[in-house]
Length: 350
Image 1 (cartoon, one colour):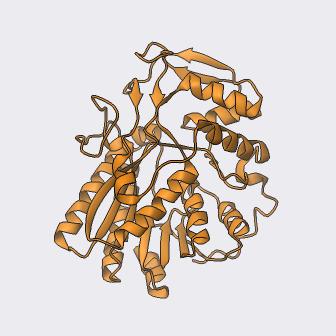
Image 2 (image 1 turned 180 degrees about the horizontal axis):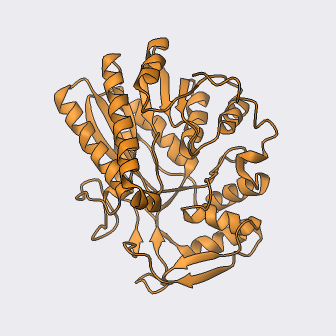
């Protein structure tokens, strides 16, 4: 099967590329590299010893997207591409709505034109807003507390409407919880632009000395140690979830949502302790006030994914921290440490 992966150079996208290639699929990657680096795809090729086409294209460029479909026999799409920083989305909401939603509308339009109706969409647990209880199941009511989350929720609604209008579509909505970790080789991992938005890359950069200390937002929640509890999932487990979703959508028509999480929550202080054990380094931190909108606990009920996809997270918090540290320690400057960092500059297709 030939699969187009939008945003395939990103953190989750690159790990999914590895799993797809190792499973015998052919892939194409479309990415504008606005918050990813082409070096990640260099390393995907190194890990898998397989080649694939790379298109340096923005989804907002409809003519360029059509060119990709006209040049290839695409059978399915895994759609990762999109802006993803919650704080930034609050500052520049129109940019987020335009980029994430318009890009997806263009993709859907082109897919329909070329009779490609199999889609795996990278959604988020942010579509649950502030849940009243945990664990969170797919049947919970949906809402959003920021523009980023709203773009995910709106796209989910759009995809449901698209199926109603054309029953040829087969769509899996994958609602991620908190991806962390890296490939066990240490060759690919999370490489955020600027200051990290998420806990694990922040902890990693404090450990490596790029940042001086971690700020913990609140220690007065109704949790065992007072800090917020979240469901962290290893990025390789998450990538494998996309393979299972891909297998599922070729067997039915419709739209189905799946939580991809472990079903277990860890507090911020537990994450710090686990990372210190994995790295052998202390992680200095200070306690600050709660952030507006944060909740005490958030973790998944992943039963539906296990039941319908045959998928279950396998890696625990120790693996997540060991692999995160291996990536960070081997790549203190992220993909910029790649000695072949300019290799693809002249070979990217356009």
